[in-house]
Structures are given as C-alpha cells and as structure tokens.
Image (cartoon, rainbow, N blue to C red; front, side, top):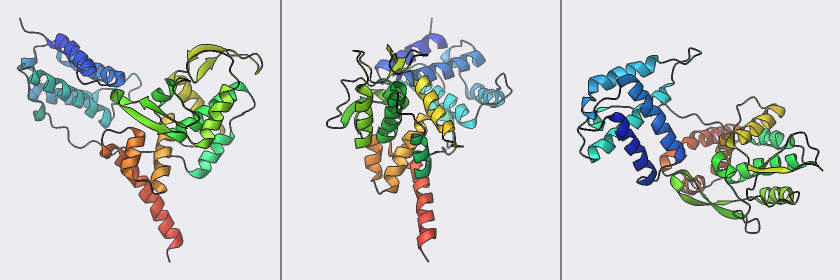
Length: 304
C-alpha cells in the first residue's frame, strides 16, 4: 500500500532538516503550510494531486479569513504554494507519482517593503535607554549590538559570553541553515557589552539573560535563562515608542538600518550580503531602492 500525504510530509520534513540542513523556522513553516493543504485536500494519495485540485486550493487560500475576518496576504498565499512545490519536488525525486511541481505557476512575489531608521531617529532611539541600572545596561548593549552587527533576533538571543570576542570585536554566528559567518562589533557596541557584563556576578553562559521583575539595581539577579526573541522584540518596540518613532520598529528594522547605512556610505553590495548572511544577492538587493532614494535626495539638495 502506498504512503498517503501525512506520511510523506513527515519524511519530507526530516529530509529538510537532515538532508537540506534547513533552519528550524523553515521546517516549522513547511509543516504549517503543508498541514493547511491536507486540511483542504484530505490525507490523499500523492497521485491524486492534480492541477485542478491545486487551482481550487489557490481559490480557497485567497478566500480564507482569520477570526477577525482578515484575508491571507498575497505573499503568505505564495509561501503556501512554494512549500507545496518544494514538497512535490521531493516526491518526484523519490519517483513517487504526483503532480509535476513546475505546473504550479506562482508568478512574481509582491515587492518586499523595507523599513529603516534614519540618523535622527536612531539618535532618539538610543537616548531613551536609562543606562544607570542593570536592565538598562543590558538593553543598551542589545540595541547597540543589533545595529552594529545586523544580527537576526534569533542569532542575538543565542549568543553566549564565550562566543563574543570583545577584544577583537568580532565573532562567528550560525544563521539560516546553520551557515557560519563572521560579524563585527563597533567600538561603541563592544563598550556597552563590557559595561553590562561588569554588572554580572553569575556564571550563566548566555550573553543576554532575563531578570526577575520587581528588583532594584542592587538586588537584581538573573534567572539564568536567555532572553527570548519575543522579549527582545518587546524591548525594541518599547524604546521606539518611548522615542516617539511612528514607524513599527523591530529587531529586523535595526538589521535593515545596519545594511542601509553601509550601502549609503559606499559599501559593496557583495560585502553587505556576506555581513547579513544572505545566500542570494537578490535578497540583499531589496535595500537598493532605499539607498537610491537617499541618493536622489542628495542630488536634489546639492545639484543645481
């Protein structure tokens, strides 16, 4: 008896993890998107996946709403289809009879919007942190590190004290797909981390740890747990709101700001690609429209 979809999907997720060395987040997304296809089509035989069924599924995704009545964004719909095509490609590789993945036409993804902070916003942002207590020193070190390195929030949350070389101001991280890359700290970021670490008397390995609430600066003691990505996102949002920045500011916006700043000041796009850990130069090119806008303003201001 041939395997049905659920069994094949389980094998596909194992393959993505071991064979393709893809990140846990990618695998989680694959599972979510493919489970939604099963909810629509049922636990059918792969041979029963026809183009007509996929087209009906596309209509279903386009009409799908959440509990608030909001429809799926076009980009999210495309990601469902991309996951399905990856799964079908895996089945074809195993000589399992199913729909040829290239028959699913996805088209061009909607243009990705990139938000970044300008110099004035960055100054206001950093000035909002009270650096007189332990949490403030930690938060300042986090913000400076995010902006100085362009780290993803998950990469920052996983940093350990042994990993970060403050003397050389550089260290290695493993990003998406466990791909290693070297990142560099600014002098300011290294000083902020050093200032924060001098307040700690614990032996906890993580660079940025959680603190028990309701403690004064003298009484504060770490829980030993690393800060979660949600906690880091919350503190970034808190300081942005405190600074009166209207934009939605996230750790990824600081990553965008890092990349944009480098390009505006003449960095080679290939170098920026390496610093960000992008597998494809196409991903890095999303920043070029921001730098073009800046160049346009410079031209308008100074060219007569």
